Length: 93
Image (tube, rainbow, N blue to C red; front, side, top):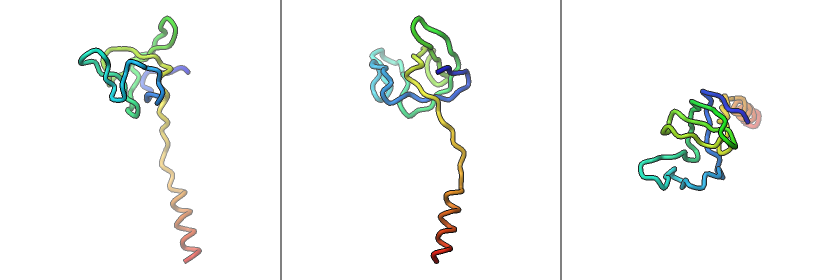
């Protein structure tokens, strides 16, 4: 899946980044990695030896395997469901 600069992404739950714990801590002191549930902005995309690599504005200058991330789906708020519930209440009441 091709990513692009400026895209918002998040770490997949089973990311395969085995050297990270759930808080994004790495074995190297002071180096913070990505955390599941956080949103990151892609600032660089490049091809590595075996896979696409991504760098993020919110993290240090390290690159991460793109297969460990998925795009953030931004959904616009739709109040249609609430309107339908209110309409149903008016019919019953």
